[in-house]
Length: 214
Image (tube, rainbow, N blue to C red):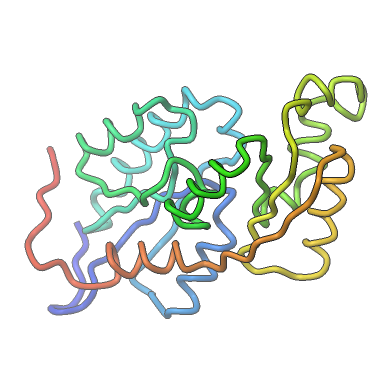
C-alpha cells in the first residue's frame, strides 16, 4: 500500500458514480487535493442496481495496494442496503444520503422538500444535461408519448437541484419539465455536500491507523 509523507493526507481513492464525475473532479481540483484519485463506475448501473455493490467492491479491492484510504461517493441507489453492508465489511466510508439528491441538497433539506411534495421528479446538473438520452428516450417516451402518464401521472413538479448552474443547463431543465407537463422549480445547491465529505473523510491525515480487512 502506498503511503505519503509523514503528516500529509494519505493517498486516497474516491470511488464514485459516473454521474458525479464532473462535480467531484471540480471539487478536488478547486482544493488542490493532489493525493486524491477518482475511479468512476458507469452511471447506467442505476438501471441495474443489483450490480452496483459488487462493482464497487471490485474497485475497492483493486485499489488496496495503491491507496491508504478509500471513500465511496454513492447513495444506496436501489441496492436495498446491500451496498452499505458491503462497505462495512470492507471498512470504507460512504457519503451520507440515500441518493445524490440528498447529499447535494443536504439530507435534512431534501427530506423536508420531499415531504412538502412527494410528487417531485428531481434533476441534477448531470440529469438535466442528459435528460433526453437517459429519461425521455431511455423510457421510450420519444416512441410512445402515451407512456408519460403511466410514468409521471402522479408527479406534480420538477425540481432542478443545480450544482453549478449556467443558462444552458437551466434551459435544459426547464425544457425537461415542459416535456413532462410538470411545474418547474430550481434550487441552487452548490457542491458543499461533496466538499464537506471529502474534507472531513479524506483531506486530513488520519489520527489512527485504519485497519483494512484482509
